[in-house]
Length: 172
Image (tube, rainbow, N blue to C red):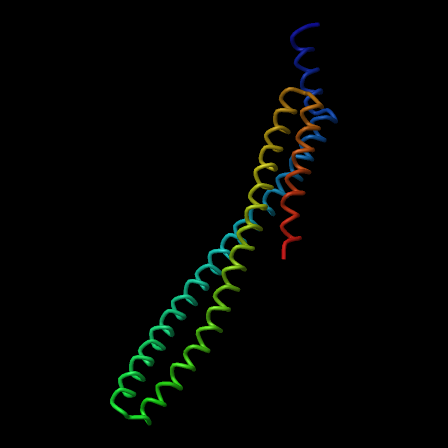
């Protein structure tokens, strides 16, 4: 076989059905990767926002606790001065702040839990992303080596990645 014929045969082989199947699967995997990547980034952003909200809520809780403590001090001062009217006013303030503290603390814990949940979801998206990226590498290797086994490995890796990413929707 001459060099020209050999080159022609390789050119035809490069456009063969195997390369087309692998290239098509790579395009699908790349699209899945893009979707999972965006979802992972969005979920990470949501996690950070929820954590910031929880932090703000804890700061609010701390401010209310300080106000409660100050009211208790004022109550004690006025009680020691035998000024029952002002002392009662600060008793009511302290009780109000204590009630507020419980509600604020409950909301802060809920926001923390939501942040942790978003973190778990984001982690699953990121692990799925890794598997999808490796699947694209394997598909590229399959085209270069013309080995179907490597392509099948790429497909399995892509399914695993998509499966891991999809489990984030099961968390609630």
